[in-house]
Amino acid sequence: MINKCSNRKLDIGQTILISGITRIDVKHINNNARTSLSLMTISRLPINVPQNRINGRLQDPPQLYGPTIEILGIGEEEAARDIVLSSAGWASVQCSRDQYVIFDVMTPDGLGIHLQQPPLLQYFFHLHGSHIEQTLFFNKHVYMEDQQETDDDNQYKSDELEMIINENIWRREKVKHQRRAKRT
Image (cartoon, rainbow, N blue to C red; front, side, top):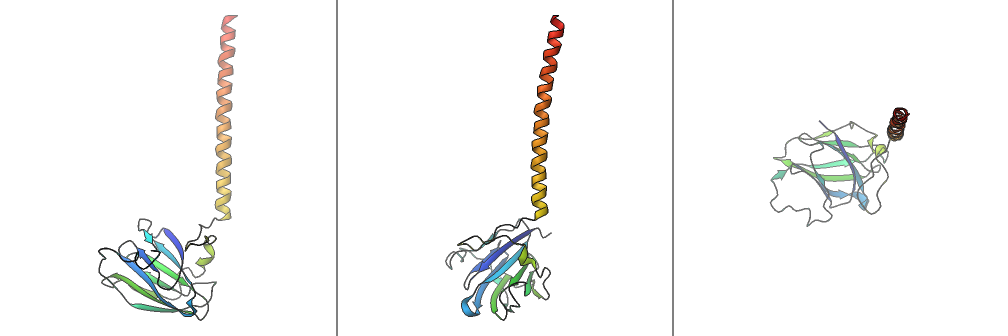
């Protein structure tokens, strides 16, 4: 079940490692621009973006093979294609119009790598939060309905706490009145 989304901006030479089962290398982007990937994976699979080529090398790397994939961008507002990774999920690729991006996509024995056109979630890139300065990452998108639910939950918890406090005060007052009634 796919239940984790991760958005990344990538430059030439950067790598994404999804657990030990998938590696995506950005080999070329014309005009030295950036491309964005939205990774949809299983939540238990760690996603790493090493900061340099040395960190991108594993000490004992698994044998990963796969094709070189070229994708032509169709605009910054929508995904151009999905790279389907059958054992890990998929990656939606977004880049500027008429911009070529070349990836090396690798899995064990090069199996389970496919291109999908049109992408499953073509306008998915609108659903990430703001870009975190000086990083490759984005904040999580907060939906207005989710924010309203959070506000409602907080109000409910506040009201519930107030009710508990009032009930405790009422019980104490009741006990005091009962004690006074017994004395007289």
